[in-house]
Length: 68
Image (cartoon, rainbow, N blue to C red):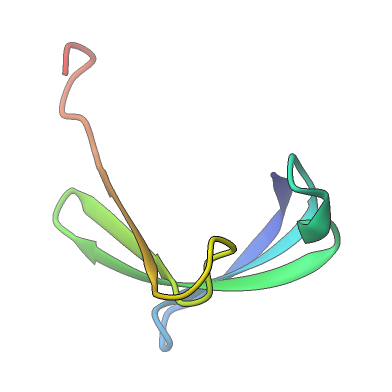
Protein backbone atom coordinates (compact mmCIF):
# COMPACT_ATOMS: atom_id res chain seq x y z
CA UNK A 1 0.00 0.00 0.00
CA UNK A 2 1.31 3.46 -0.80
CA UNK A 3 -0.06 6.96 -0.55
CA UNK A 4 -0.04 9.69 2.06
CA UNK A 5 -1.48 10.27 5.50
CA UNK A 6 -2.55 12.97 7.94
CA UNK A 7 -2.47 12.77 11.73
CA UNK A 8 -5.27 14.34 13.78
CA UNK A 9 -3.97 14.60 17.35
CA UNK A 10 -7.26 15.82 18.84
CA UNK A 11 -9.15 12.80 17.38
CA UNK A 12 -6.22 10.46 18.04
CA UNK A 13 -6.54 9.25 14.46
CA UNK A 14 -4.60 8.86 11.24
CA UNK A 15 -6.28 9.34 7.86
CA UNK A 16 -4.79 7.32 5.03
CA UNK A 17 -5.11 8.30 1.37
CA UNK A 18 -4.31 5.07 -0.46
CA UNK A 19 -3.09 5.66 -4.01
CA UNK A 20 -2.41 1.99 -4.78
CA UNK A 21 -1.31 -1.34 -3.40
CA UNK A 22 -1.95 -5.07 -3.34
CA UNK A 23 -5.70 -4.63 -2.80
CA UNK A 24 -7.03 -2.95 -5.99
CA UNK A 25 -10.38 -2.20 -4.32
CA UNK A 26 -8.52 0.22 -2.00
CA UNK A 27 -6.88 2.20 -4.83
CA UNK A 28 -7.67 5.93 -4.58
CA UNK A 29 -9.54 5.47 -1.30
CA UNK A 30 -9.47 7.18 2.09
CA UNK A 31 -9.43 5.23 5.34
CA UNK A 32 -9.26 6.27 8.98
CA UNK A 33 -7.55 4.43 11.84
CA UNK A 34 -7.70 5.33 15.52
CA UNK A 35 -4.33 5.30 17.28
CA UNK A 36 -2.96 5.20 20.81
CA UNK A 37 0.65 5.46 21.95
CA UNK A 38 1.61 4.03 25.32
CA UNK A 39 5.33 3.96 26.10
CA UNK A 40 7.00 1.89 23.37
CA UNK A 41 3.70 0.61 21.94
CA UNK A 42 1.58 1.94 19.10
CA UNK A 43 -1.92 0.51 18.74
CA UNK A 44 -4.24 1.27 15.88
CA UNK A 45 -7.83 0.21 15.35
CA UNK A 46 -9.78 -0.24 12.15
CA UNK A 47 -13.50 -0.09 12.99
CA UNK A 48 -14.46 -1.43 9.53
CA UNK A 49 -12.01 -4.17 8.47
CA UNK A 50 -12.35 -5.66 4.98
CA UNK A 51 -12.68 -9.14 6.51
CA UNK A 52 -16.12 -8.42 7.94
CA UNK A 53 -17.65 -7.29 11.21
CA UNK A 54 -15.91 -6.31 14.39
CA UNK A 55 -12.87 -4.11 14.90
CA UNK A 56 -9.35 -5.02 13.79
CA UNK A 57 -6.66 -4.08 16.35
CA UNK A 58 -2.91 -4.02 15.62
CA UNK A 59 -0.28 -3.36 18.30
CA UNK A 60 3.34 -2.62 17.39
CA UNK A 61 6.17 -2.48 19.93
CA UNK A 62 9.44 -0.63 19.42
CA UNK A 63 12.52 -2.84 19.65
CA UNK A 64 15.12 -1.59 22.11
CA UNK A 65 18.10 -3.00 20.17
CA UNK A 66 18.92 -4.76 16.91
CA UNK A 67 19.22 -8.10 18.76
CA UNK A 68 15.55 -8.14 19.82
